[in-house]
Length: 185
Image (cartoon, rainbow, N blue to C red; front, side, top):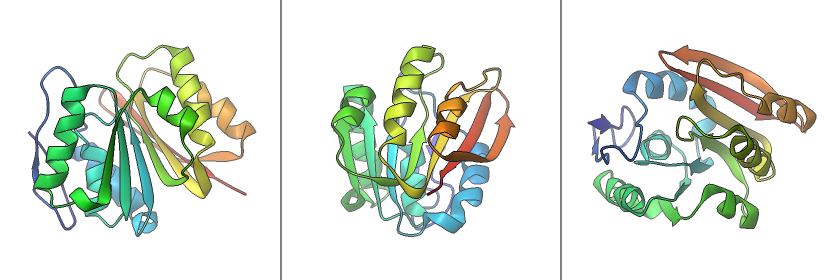
């Protein structure tokens, strides 16, 4: 079972739908959020391919102000709402049941932290489309955090360099790799 590892909702157990989502491990969450801790306070977050909502809820528990979760699967979207209630964070979340690409194309909001954790595998073209769209809704000095298979080279790094993002942190965990990119002026 997944849980929130730190903050106001520490140790809250999160519901996970078997076979629908691929939850992030506690080890990865702890390392990632310890790294993000200096920029979490009062941040506005976007959790794409949200699954159970574990990443966005962890951010809220550790001091983020609000998280929008985008998840296409209706059962997973219901779990996010329930997990927000369990963590007593329901007033700080919006759950959008929609394809990530459709949400990003119509998004008028800007975010400080964007978490992109697509299903493994996802076609490169779709990944590139999501990344380009996410870049456009990131605040100046905001961050995009990717989780992807560690055997892949993320081609979006080229796009990120062109749009003034820099890779500020990267780490491998078993079959996963996490990269954090920061948007500069």
